[in-house]
Length: 319
Ligand SMILES: Nc1ncnc2c1ncn2[C@@H]1O[C@H](COP(=O)(O)OP(=O)(O)O)[C@@H](O)[C@H]1O
Ligand SMILES: [Mg+2]
Image (tube, rainbow, N blue to C red):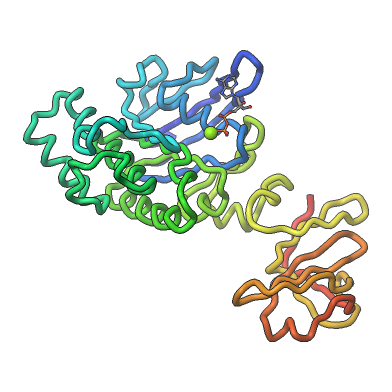
């Protein structure tokens, strides 16, 4: 694609021990937020560091706006990276933290001040210039870290699990704020997370990784509705797996319809009925494995452990 903002072409980066990533191809459009998703150790950070210039690669190329960046030092690249934690210098005030990169780039003093003030407003933290990182919460510190990287106006912003050290509630709030700022400013972002919910909520496209390779790339809905492999089906959302005649049938809990009795596509017996707030999770024992579904509180009153249940699947996958 000629108009891609960021292109990774056949990139391989292996460490001395043989771990790393192989034959990675990724194309990111301008203004797109793309997420590398996968369990710990699958190679997400390795790719991000390669883009940022902190990892030498063995083969392949990385281009931004059509120009190869692999021979550029990290500070010369049009990228900025934010890590999971320890992003700010603790002995420096917020203002000094934010001003540092602008000074290096020889931005005049008055402009530095103006840009920092504007950026702090953008991330909803006006007036914190004199504070020190230790006087702020983890979420506030990450907000400043992202603000600081945005000040440098990178062509591509690299975020490596920036919210994973934060509480669930703050994490969700930060997610929404990031998405708003990213779309408002039309920034191109490569985001890394091991949290599938975060990836699905935040991204234009998600790249599901498995042991150093790309397993599937697509819009969140596409990956959820059409997981290409058992691995992706297992990693994204909830899924029942049934072993039937040597094949694996995968069914999402929301695609299981239940009624009392027998004569369904699959029959079984109630195993557990668990109240989970405004809905109820029910599991059934079958000859092919356990099946989970969600029902209303009202429906749940009909079902007791050991009752026969007939199941029909409105949608399923075969692997
Ligand atoms: N500096 C390194 N030297 C050797 N192996 C490494 C190094 N960094 C990462 N690895 C290995 O490479 C693989 C991918 O690591 P990483 O990119 O950090 O994964 P992720 O960010 O998805 O958790 C892992 O098996 C990890 O142990
Ligand atoms: Mg990592």
